[in-house]
Length: 310
Image (cartoon, rainbow, N blue to C red; front, side, top):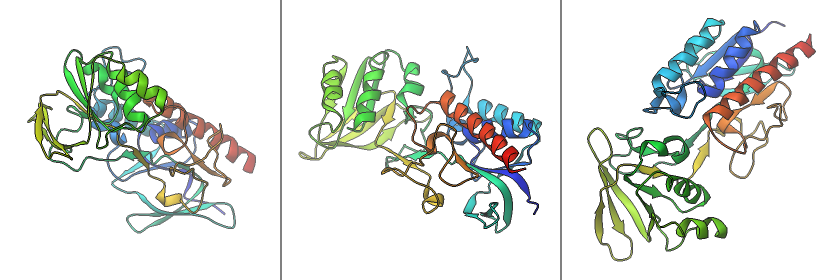
């Protein structure tokens, strides 16, 4: 039986587009589905300063466009504004992917590269200033805020670790948490609070983020006293957790307790022909360079899988 494609890649962020470069270059009939914008969240970044080869940095938009152009150069088709509503493995071992536009397409293999999305602060200014001082990754963006005050929102391991990282750059770090203690590992908390730049703001929540073109400050409310304060910070790092975009395949693959897809080192799921890569999966770190590498590995694994089916 013939199929529409050799591989359908669900997700057109860095992981999915990296996979498409390799599958396209291997002359596999490749389709990428991206329901929002090519490049995913990285396309919204004002600047990328930690990807090898770009010594002067590059905007997220330009980076995403370069990836898209590269994938298309090798013949990959990219459907923007179209996602996947369903993925079914048929009795013949091929896959049927139901698209958000109502069509069904078939493929010999599928790469899941839907990524994850950060838990948002539902406050005025968050969306408007995202990528302009509002960030969900201190490791990615911290170096842009040297010698200025910043805020970190959250109290778990990510917030404490990323906040600690920011001590290299920021002049002050207002660490805002709705409880009266952090919930991170004890050793991380001790190291964090030992830093003189760190100013804990307990029992408090962010009510608004101020600024026109960039972050200029935040409004904080104390949950016990109801007192409101203004903090003149230049960045707000929101680290209150991530949500894997795995709902589509919840009944198809194995997930961990956080909803992340379980894969082996070859990016294989438990389903033959179904691969997953990048932020969607359980990974030791979540950085641009390593999720791109995940996409490459998934593509190479797809090629070997299809060779074995001939």
